[in-house]
Length: 259
Image 1: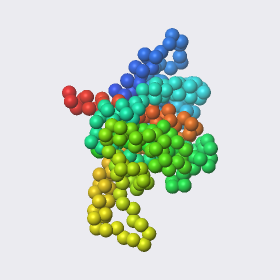
Image 2 (image 1 turned 90 degrees about the horizontal axis):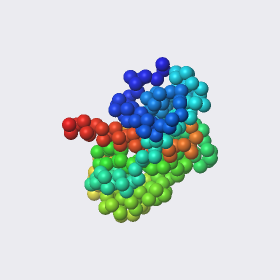
Image 3 (image 1 turned 180 degrees about the horizontal axis):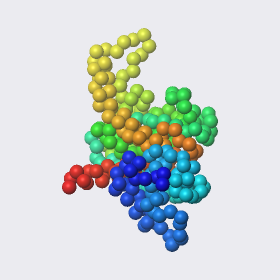
């Protein structure tokens, strides 16, 4: 068997949780794989981005069947992904960190729209919101890769929702001009130097927003975000599924720590 729990760098409890999601939604129809096997296949697809051809060969099923099983399983945690307002109410952070990430795709939908000139890659723009320690709180739906981060933040109403909940935002210079609720560094103007006060402010903000890089790195630990072989149109569902899995894993770890 190609797929084995030992090869998956995820808590066993998370695999069991996804298996239970499948069992509770199971109909009476007989399937070729047990719920636990389908859960493993979907999680390996997300975490390791193993090709469906290899997954199918390891499980002794056709590639089309592997695709159908994986898509069906991913839809279960994706449907449970919380909205930003609910996340802010549940976690009540003092402030949040905002950053954009490019999830690369080698199958471009609209070639021009999906090409990011900043990264010089095709992909989709996903906005990541973390708490001050860099723990992932929310992922946005995917937008074409050429979308500017500030445009994406406005499209998803991230700034408006944070202001509504009274949660300030700290972000990089790309979000400059978003309004007083979002704090960024000070950009140097042409032919002018920053004052010592401005430089001190920028250093302090850089230190405050540094943890968001850990949140983005955690996102990229799901290798499907590094170079997806699927259509960009599927990345929103994938982002929602990964968000739900990350939040559940974080909650399970916190519960074990309390006990």
